[in-house]
Image (cartoon, rainbow, N blue to C red):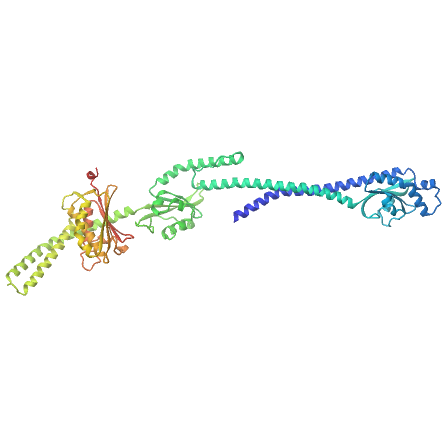
Length: 606
């Protein structure tokens, strides 16, 4: 809306600048033309009065003398003068159509002739008013032109004093009705108005076309600069004239910027760390590929957006950037875990103040390092250390317990053999033997946990081992209403491991999955070879595992079951780690997924 109002104001301003001078010029020209016409009329009327004065070669008394009317009455003398001068004034009036001419005799205080006589004869013999301008003309002995109501009506009246023998005997006049002058002025005005109107229309159209052209050029420049702000490889189309020079200058500037920034951008986009730059207002101006990989937000979604919109809900990021922009405080080695997504990431973040060479604060920069793999390796190493210590302790306990158990079992069997058949005590000796057997199995598990790699590494086909393991749980799965679904990709992939121990690993994971699916469902087993590793994913539709238990499920003796040793997954992890792999657990949309990763056998791939 603001842009639209500005555009209207610009157009109005341009039109006003071009049209107003024409209108002002027209008004000035009209005033000058009116003044010139009036002056021309005044000069013409004054010239006619001079002609009347010149035509009267004698004075009024000579005219009366020629007619023998020197001693006649005033009225008769007026008539005599009219007879003597009427032909003269009619002739002059005829030469100037629309002009009234005549003489005034001062002694008689009367108009003695008024031509054309046919139209103005009725005014002969009339005196002029006491305040008539003619009296001032005679008194001051100077010609004058007066506009206003007089004997004839509203007229322009030119009066010239008539002097004979050093005495003013009257005056001659020539006048024209203002009505006829107004008609001429109206015609002149109409012509000037037409010219000014046509000029204004032409100027307005030309201005509009010019403004439209300028607007198109400005829009092209605006759009070009907008696109250049995102893509410096964009170039504006060549054009003729001055716009072409502007476009060429912008293209050259863009080429220079692209050349100066390409090296830096290449370095930034090649970095493994995510780099994000913000201006002083919090608008994102730079976003590299690593930032996209870490945050899951593309360059198009982030660039030119406010950081509060892009990182909405991410309190760690918002706090670090807010402190950098508003308080100038930087952050070092803060941890952040992005929300959403199937894989939990651990990211180290640091902020820096972005300054110009003149030490002017331009904004802030945030650097992100994906520490997920490092975190996993750190966790795996810590877990391996704990398992090693627990394994040594378990081996010691197993050896110390096994010998007494063997003796207890032997003595219990001896006592049972000595008791007669049907003796009540034989029931107790049987319980003793069964419990000793259960303890022996537990010690076997402890020994397996402490030394999972006693068997030699041999090539084992993962698909075949999984098939054999699935056969063992098939009947249990059917009884629980669980459907087994297999998706083997790169099924010939092999690993160097003990098939029996791998079977133990898969069996522990599958049994836990079945026990979690109390209401039945689908149990999905997938295999895939990726980057020299074999990934086995076992996904069940059971309830999710609490986030805080996802790592501890592989700890020895950790279990959520009422009857369980908590060694199954711990033993599985120890076996897989012994072959250079690892097991991880996570919650997915389907349920819970455990992933076994083992190094692939290179000879088999070749």
